[in-house]
Every structure is written in structure tokens, then in C-alpha cells.
Image (cartoon, rainbow, N blue to C red):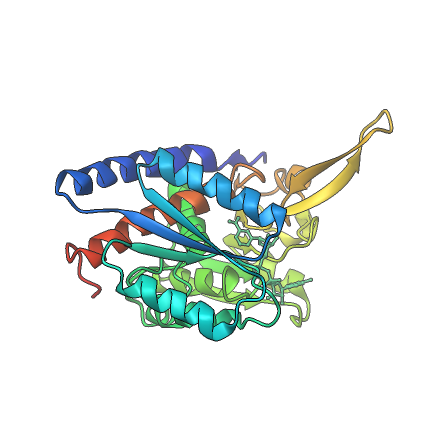
Length: 296
Ligand code: NAD
């Protein structure tokens, strides 16, 4: 079998088109859509990422303000900035770029993001609402994984799903959303004994680990749907001996394509849909802040 490719770029473009028209509709009602992003420290890589993100929001018509804070900021000062943004009626969305400096507690910081403005769905209260089965705003990567599965038409209700990776930002929220959709979900992690036994019985395999080549054909049941959340930079050498860096997932894409029925590529799979979901959450947050949607 040769797997069909799940086109993340296409799905992302469809979501972004809808987001742009939703933003225009809000503006036509004189309702702002304004995202405040916080960047702590002066890492050039983080700055490039923040600049790219500013462009993405501008393309969707979302106003964007970047708050660049010094490396030495204290936890209390950072929490105070978040409290000010929470009260600011002109700001409808808030996000905090990670990683934060080691002296800052990430979870405490996320706890101070207003839950209605939390466009990444990272406030523990928002994760808790995903657990209760009525998300206010859910984490973007988990939403992306579910949306990509939905494009295949393979039903989630009753499906055996194995999620490899149990992080708070990717694996665990994906498992919760999939459980809510009626799938029977197994979550594997670094301490899982006999990973193959769990992955082989999956109709749908979702992988979020950060280890290139972790998932090989022997892990995958013939005809399974494979969603690769991993993003890894690796150095590869071509036939002429020239080496270059490239981005790959956690799944051996070429080999597993011979076994799976559907597979997401990396790049071009989960990544662009995660960005699109961030935009969609930004609209949702604006609608919540303006009282046009209700949290429950
Ligand atoms: P993390 O390091 O927080 O968590 C990794 C998880 O994998 C842990 O639960 C760990 O127990 C598990 N794990 C490690 N080795 C394992 C093994 N051999 N077998 C089974 N489980 C194992 O990572 P994260 O933040 O969840 O990110 C995971 C990957 O997903 C990374 O490559 C990251 O770049 C990528 N990611 C992509 C997106 C996206 O938008 N596409 C978003 C978030 C993360």
C-alpha cells in the first residue's frame, strides 16, 4: 500500500481563509481583534519566530503588538504585565513565547494568562476544560491533529488511537480531544514498555516525541492513519557526500508510507495547521471577549 498524503498546507489555507473573513466580519461590527505577544529575553531565533508570527497575523487582518521584556524580568513583574493585558479592553488575545528564562516558572506564567484571551489554550484552566469535555479554547497542536484526521473521513468514534508522547502541550491534550470524540485512546511515553505492541493495534497513530525515525513500519498496522507532530532538524548527506540540514518528523516517512493508508508529511502536515488553529483561536478569543460567544 502507498499512503495518501494528508495535505496540511491545503487545510491550513482553508482555515485561514475562514479566519480572514471572520476577522473582517468582527471589524465590520466595530469589534477589535488584537493579539498581544510577550517575548522575554533577546534570543535572535525567538525574535525571528516572533517576526514571522507578526506577519502571519497581519495577513489575517489581526492587529499584533509585541511586548519585548528583559531577560532579567522577575516573575512578579511578568505576572503584572499579564494582569494589565488581561484588563486591557483593547487586547482580545494574549500569548507568551516559550522558552522562558530558567528563573521564570512557565506554568505559573501561563496561569496568569486571562482564560478568555488565552489563544494557545495553555492556561491550566483551559486544559482542565478540555479534560471536562467542554473546551473554551483548546491547545492548537492538539486541535490540528484532530482536524487532520477528520480530513481523511476515517471515523474517530470507536477507533483505536495510540498517541506516542505525553507532553502537556501536544500528546496529552490530543489524547483528551480524541477521547472526547469517542476514540479508545492509549497514551505512550518514555517509560512505556513494548511500544510496538501499543502502536501496532492502532487504527490511528499520533506521534509527538521529538525523535527522528522513532516510528518505523513495524510500529504501524497496515492501513493505519499516521499523524506526525514531531519537528526535528537533522543533517543528511546526499549521494555526492554533500551534507545539509532538513526538517523531519518522528516517523520514517518513506518507509511508513508503504504501510499506512494516510500520512502527514513533515514539513507541510501538522505545522501549518497548528498556525492556522492559533489564528482560529484568536478569533474565538475575540468573540469571547466581545461577548459574541459564550464560554460554555
Ligand atoms: P516533550 O519533550 O515535552 O515530550 C516528549 C514526549 O515524548 C514525552 O511524553 C516523553 O515521555 C515521550 N517520549 C520520549 N521518548 C520516547 C520514546 N522513545 N518512546 C515513547 N515516548 C517517548 O516534547 P513536545 O513539546 O510534546 O514535542 C514533541 C515533538 O513535537 C517535538 O519534535 C516538537 O518540536 C514537536 N511539536 C510540534 C508542534 C507542531 O505544531 N507541529 C507543536 C508542538 C510540538
